[in-house]
Length: 365
Ligand SMILES: NC(=O)C1=CN([C@@H]2O[C@H](COP(=O)(O)OP(=O)(O)OC[C@H]3O[C@@H](n4cnc5c(N)ncnc54)[C@H](OP(=O)(O)O)[C@@H]3O)[C@@H](O)[C@H]2O)C=CC1
Ligand SMILES: N[C@@H](CC(=O)OP(=O)(O)O)C(=O)O
Image (cartoon, rainbow, N blue to C red; front, top):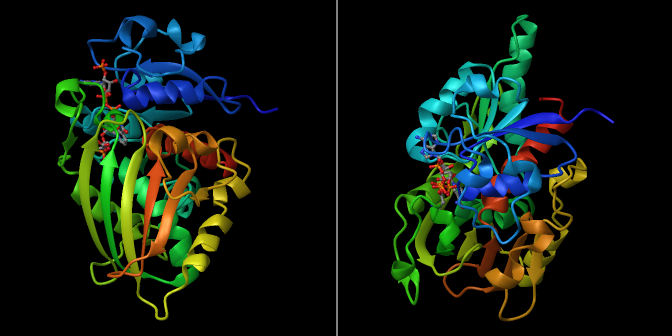
């Protein structure tokens, strides 16, 4: 058996960072060795630095790791570094890591819009990693050292949205119009400071700063295709797809729900049964590649009239699967449905781990 790859986590004390700790404990391919967080946490044992809020206990293996500050020198032995850094600080820190030759998979928004940075939801568009492969091949051919690189994970609500869209576009052609109204969990707002109880209890907050723009833009990159020279992603244009998002914060701990409606470009549109069958039949590439964390059932089509529900359905396929229910015809567009995805697993840390498993399967780390 091959030796495990050494992994580090930046932002290890936060909402996403804690999920990374859980997902990497006892992982067959990765050994978590280095944890980084702010100067407030650096120098402390992880158990003392992290305000642990997960329903699973903190893994013993993480408790006594001394939290480092986020300089690349502390992570130089890592084969892969996952970032759950606060976006206010992620930009320069992640840049320094890449310049130091480190492979970074980031949850932060800072580099998602860079032309040559793949924005990857691993159950949807792992082929966008070809951009990184191209960089690695070019350096190798030139006799240079393996360069550092960054891969971004999408916004958490966008990850849930694009999962059912991918097989639908593959089977029935492009989507003309897409609307989504989200009901987002409080873990999505992070822990520092996070959403306060008095704000969210018995309440719905109809605004999440920047979220609607991110959903509308990132969808066009994720559903776009890699350029012929593999240097960048060609985004779908506003003429190719119209996307409209409305985002709300609700008093749910984990799991983002989205009420979506869509219209295909091609006529006649498929039937409801064809849409359901297409979603049921979808097998993501990561599962075909036998990646450890890949969901066996990428999309769970639920037939009960009152599902999906966050508490009951967010952990399907260990949080790597996406649930879709209430698929029906829409009198304005073609179809409407309710999508549920685990925001810190397939929407964040889980996607990071699954991307790393794909990189490993492709010998890219
Ligand atoms: N939560 C979610 O569902 C999703 C989050 N994201 C993105 O992932 C990232 C992390 O989010 P989340 O976990 O929710 O955020 P949190 O606020 O919970 O965690 C932020 C992390 O950043 C660290 N940090 C803060 N300031 C600094 C600094 N100056 N230097 C180094 N580290 C610092 C914190 O360390 P310390 O504890 O020491 O302060 C903590 O580990 C964000 O960019 C977010 O937008 C993306 C998708 C989904
Ligand atoms: N804004 C998302 C989480 C998040 O931080 O997203 P992003 O990484 O795109 O800023 C939420 O509140 O649920």
